[in-house]
Image 1: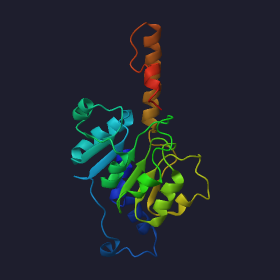
Image 2 (image 1 turned 180 degrees about the vertical axis):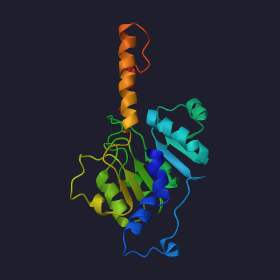
Image 3 (image 1 turned 90 degrees about the horizontal axis):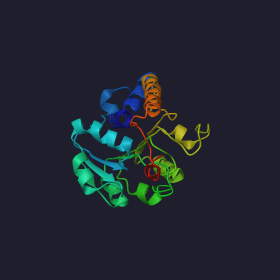
Amino acid sequence: MPLTVTLMALRKAYEFNRQMHDPDSNQDRRRMGFGNELHYKRVGIVAASMTGRAFVRLLQPFQPEILVFDPYLSEERARELGVRRIDDLDELFATCDVVSNHAPTTAETNGMIGAPQLARLRDGALFVNTARAAAIDYDALTRELESGRICAAIDVFPKEPLTPDSPLRRLDNVILSPHVAGGTVESRQRLGEAMVDEFARFFAGEPLRYGVTKQMLATMA
């Protein structure tokens, strides 16, 4: 999902679709303009979580420069992932064309992305959140989006479902989805099969494939 909405937002797929469905819009391609490519862009990833690392792998064919902010990511692991580890969240926001949040909800991440970081996004930048809402100041994000200088793709919200009067609903520079980033018919089936297999392993005394320790829970969603 993060890659899907990143590509669609950069290429203005929703905007073109909206214009093509409106018989009163000016559909002259020269006036509609063009979208942008993901190739060779600088992409910032907040948190090298499981989804963050999966996103890194999906980005590889586009040959972007990938910056990752995660205090738990070692330099060795960053080299293995083919990313540049960055310690300054403000710098990541100020220098990337795309910023994608993959941070879990923990005491450390709560409110981590606020007005100071969002204001540093360059004009035309894309902010993607398909992870959790608690890490982001949504009021500040809404203000930046209302200015029209950035765009976003958002799958999660502080209160769900998204309220009917949310200002995000009336903004054309935002792709919205109802917390379905990881959900497909096929993924739900695979999840069920994986859990049945995991129970079988547990009762057979075999090592678990998806075991979670107390230490892991400190930094997981």
